[in-house]
Length: 475
Image 1 (cartoon, rainbow, N blue to C red):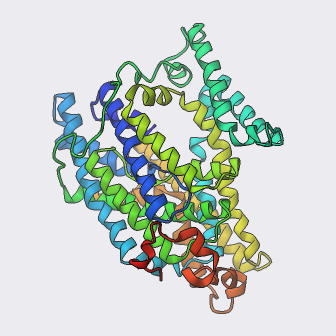
Image 2 (image 1 turned 180 degrees about the vertical axis):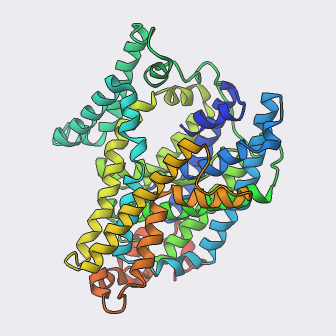
Image 3 (image 1 turned 90 degrees about the vertical axis):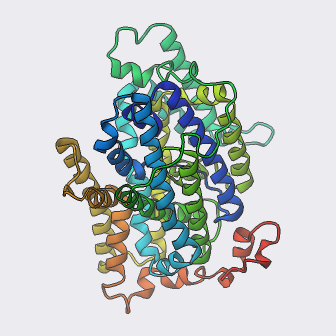
């Protein structure tokens, strides 16, 4: 979705879009392997992040780049500028992660403070759900109904003692609806429909399969040497901070859905450090966006009830394999976005409900707790919605000064629902009668998992492979 939107704005062709999609798939496959092997070791997939859209669009609209007349050269120079900004900004997560500074920050988080953050990791993406389904209801609604039917109502259907429909509900329903969409396309059902309808419904509008090479291996600096600009890098740093906060919420949700203990502060910090390495790789290879934990795949843990990191590692191998075999990767990338949006309606909802489930560890009879959760949830939805509406009307964010880097920084931060929720919830939770409300906040339950040795199960879930804990002992 991200390359399909950004590449045309940069002056890129369908060939360029295919290469960016392949590169994104390849690098995120590598990042997923690194995260599951050496990072948090939770069964999470690393994917492209929407948090980076604001600073990247700002770079695209930089006048020095817009003045380049040749479209291909404008695409290359814009890509190099984005790469340079990502490389510099990645240092934020690398430093915060490996210095254990993020571990210190997480000590101010309580179960109460995490409720709105994790909930809005899911709820905050509501505009990627039914609003996109509504663009092609004849595909989106059947997909939504079929996915819910297979994963919930028919989950007890077993073949050789395997809950086949529950485990493979996503694959089966996507295959059925994709075939149905292709049938509608081939029969000419959209021949005389508006262009926007065709773009969202047809299976041949991506223009990827014909443009994709059979075999292509992405490599570092394939677009040329990155260019560095302080303003671009500063704006991108805000996106890296947003990615860090959203990933923290996703890691906690993934641990709960995978039946693991909450990740200790040291483990979270280690994961953020490796995520910073991932963003550095994004910049070196040129994926056009930074990395974060894939929220939809966290939701899929709850839908399939498969929480094995080995499954995720094999999936990462498939990501790398399909990115190298371009035609196969392009085939999957040609699935209409409406089908994915229908799945998001379920998966993002599951992630949001995990956040709400943390209420059981807090005292919800406390007016203090009700106040903090209510205000954080409301502002977490309301502030980004204000920024979105303002930007749609004025074609620029509410922060609109002569300092473009300052505008990008503020607009990026307040476009993110989990980030706004974290700022509000953690600030209120640590300043409002916090000394006398430890039990109400859920701190006694949380304290057992603060350190690696606080719970005997943490070693099973989070120890490094190949006996590496001898050289990097957990704190």
